[in-house]
Image 1 (cartoon, rainbow, N blue to C red):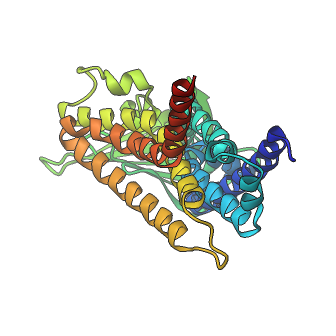
Image 2 (cartoon, rainbow, N blue to C red):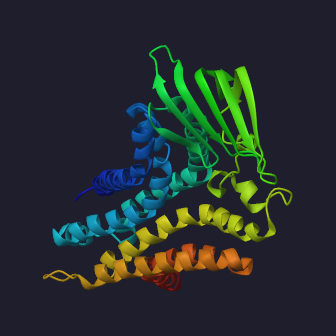
Length: 376
């Protein structure tokens, strides 16, 4: 007779290997599709492949956090369904293993997935996403100025366009024209014979030589021209670009659940609360989804010809729960009294499945204990 711990290790090893492979493959696929949005940074601004990979890799933890509950369900359903198809579950039942003993490897795998999802949602994803946004901001608003191309109108921002005729190997710029609309009602066109790029206080600036600054007064239509021998121009998008508004995905859990009224608009409080509760409840969905897969395979009589009805029902159940979760998050952002339903939707399916799977075993154990007491 096989030892129980040997069976646990055998099934758990299959579950964990499949979980790592499936989660990694699906996350890589999502990363590939999402990273295409940043190809323009490499092509249009001359960034290296290393910078591109470093930037996009910071999004990977968020992908893993999203797909891990789903892959936990898929792996649990697939592995146990294969064990049932190969008659291995039949042998285990004949050896005297209870439903709880059969489900124990799946429960361990689900618990590991739940803990990993907690770590991702509460610590890793906010930190990595914050680094991603900071890096993207730096590339788009600071490094862009150093990626000026010859003979191309480079749009550094919505209010700043730069053209250079020639760029020498030593970094000297020739034939410079700058369209600067950063100051309201004061559009300026700047021409310079030459210039060079410098960094001042971590900001890109261009030092212009032998040029002119032309401004047209919008009220009078009068042209004002200022000639200069040397002038320094800041190439950041605006003075307010240094303070970047943070996305909800970057905030900590305490900031989401207890936002500062001075920094958060009243209409956004519900959205932040939903994001906070989503981080708390998503790990429980990993456990609940795994329980749905276990119930689909372990509960019910074995069929020689296979049974696709229960696995198909499990898949449809999970799809319905995912749709319900999105609906509740959308409604909770508008009406905060519905937010507790997000927690119920994550936890209740797991509890119901546990009762369905282990309830008969618990009741039979109680009845046996009761009969033994009466017999004594």
